[in-house]
Length: 250
Image (tube, rainbow, N blue to C red):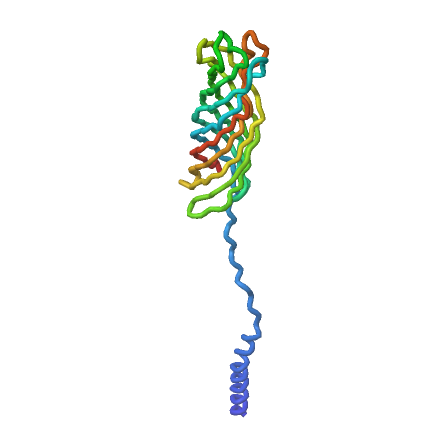
C-alpha cells in the first residue's frame, strides 16, 4: 500500500515537472515601458540684430532743368560712396526670415553738363558745368528665402520695399561764371533686390556677405534764383557690395 502511494506521488511530481514549461510558455509577455526622453524646450523666438557696411557704385542718373532756354543735361555721373546700416529681424523657420533696416548712404558728388540754347547765365556760351552733393537715408522692409545650408554656408535671395530721403547740398555751377544754390530734400518710394550668403561663425553669430541693387528715386535742388524750376537728378540707383554681422537673440 505504501508503495502504491509512493508511485502515485512520484507520478504526480513527474507530471507537474512536464507541465511547468508548457504553463510558462502560455503566460503572456508584458512590454517593458521605457521612460520617454524629455522634449526640448521651445525656442524663445527667432529675433536677430544686424549691422552692415558696404561699397556703393551709383549708375549715371538722368538730370534735368525744366526751364525755358535750357536743354537736357549730358555727361551725368554720380561718384561711388559708402553705405552703413542696421536692422532687426525675425527668423520664421529654416527658409524664411524678414527684417527692417535703416541705411545711410554717404555724400556722393554729381557732375553734369547743362546745354544752353542761348548764351548761358553770365554770358557763357554752349553749356555750363554743374555739380552737387547728394546723400540718402533709406528704410526698408525685407523678406529673404534661405535656400539651404552646406558646410556652414547658407545662400539666400531677397527683396525689400520702403522709402528713401535724398538730400542735395553744395549745389553749384563750377564753370565760369561760378554760382552756388540751395539744396533740398525729397521723399521717394525705394526698393531693393538682394542675393548673398551667410556663414555660421558661432551658435548665435553669422557673417553675411551680399550684393544689393538699390533704387532710391529722385533728388532735386531748391528753385534756382531768377528761375522757376529746380535742378533735378532722376533715376538714382546703385549696386552695393555689403559685409555685415547677424546676431541671433534666441
